[in-house]
Length: 397
Ligand SMILES: *Cc1c(COP(=O)(O)O)cnc(C)c1O
Image: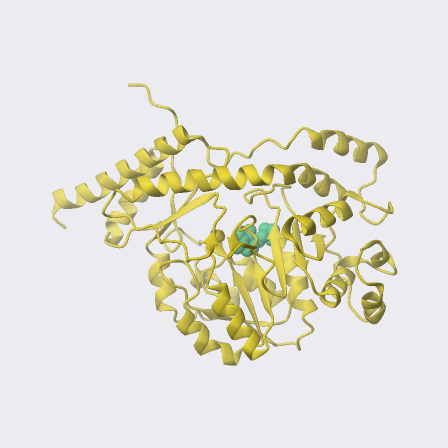
């Protein structure tokens, strides 16, 4: 029997050919530094990205981690300020908080991958700021979070690193809080290898971030932000030099028109595989919250009834067929398991997040896959699941 081979889930989409002419121009002129020319590709990217999201300002930097760090620094909070973050996030997020001389306060997350609102309410009075990671586009209840934070006078930052294109009640994720941060690392929706960008409507916050990103002397004059905001901060802030170079912007800009297609195809692929998996009694795909429209390039699902042994057998069976499923809590040294963030000291007790991480499966599902590819993947997953659960019955454990 000939079977369609499993696609490579880690291969990238080619960069649009339009990037080539601009990259060649940049290499020919050697114009790699964003502040050399009056208008650099980085400034154009910032203008285009801000317009795309409906934000007033954008600042492109070297990574989303850098954007998160600069945003935290730009809040002008005292050293040691406490920042609430979800316990289910990527290690770069607590790292950015520590880098900014602040203290992360981990909030429990539910088996739907989102902030547990009871733990959120309990911890809110003890923090100075809130940083929400929309992990894999799963959006926590932003209406409830914004209402609580507005009432308490707390700033909200959105880590939308892997959530570009997701909307909440029609608004782009990343534009709901004081500032939002996105990644251009290769596994995200726009691929520059490395890179990040922050958006905000707050001129003063952006002015501070622009200066700290490395707009030394009067390079800030090349940013379309109120110059009075810059004048306030001139020479008063450290320069961390986290700028984006022009080549990265030249690689990202031609991908912006591709975004709508990637979002639509990613959603189609996700929903197709989710519907196929839902046919299995072992699989639970958490429903989106009302108001959330994701732009997924991966799928997450829970295996609530399976034993540890069966989960291990499922992952091994899928891997034998060429599919790398990660169970966040069981893959060795996983950067999304909070107990591996040893740099924070002893791990807090977060029972709901821990239980979810031990049962939640994650698989990349890039937008470039066809529905036929998705069927091959769903067949393989269901096959591995069947074998893992049947085996167990045979041995009567
Ligand atoms: C990728 C990612 C980051 C870090 O982005 P970098 O650009 O690699 O620094 C942060 N948060 C989340 C949720 C991510 O997925």
